[in-house]
Amino acid sequence: MNNYSPKLFGNYFKGWGDNIKERVISHQLRVSHKSLLAIAKVASIFSWIIFVFFILSAINYYYQAKTVYFIKFAGSIPTNSFEQMLTYDFTYAIKLFLNMIKELLHGGFYFLVLKGISCGLRMIVQTDINYRTKAICNERESSNDL
Image (tube, rainbow, N blue to C red; front, side):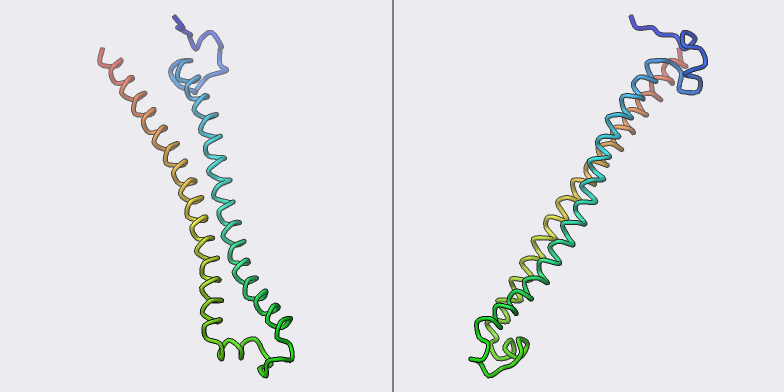
């Protein structure tokens, strides 16, 4: 029998809805939704950080291969630059390119997973708000019909 009256609290809850029960539900929704939306925002931000990290990782893979080439074969191979070596050794160039693509695909996969989590959490919050709003509207209409 929690029949709270808005008159009990004076003007403190003025404009917050028709009764205290709705206000309490509204407050609980705001708290739970804020936490879900915060997680969604963190996932969205973290997805971009991960994506940039893997792009930089793919670029770094190229420079590591270039450094290893100069350390291993300095002076023993007649080609002077790494790019010239890639034109001569086509299989090594393909392996290097595929490894860089693999890094980018890993980053893209993690980016899409985190973006999906973010979008999913936002959809859950929006769906919950819509259902609760519809339920409150239906309750008001049924009470007005009586």
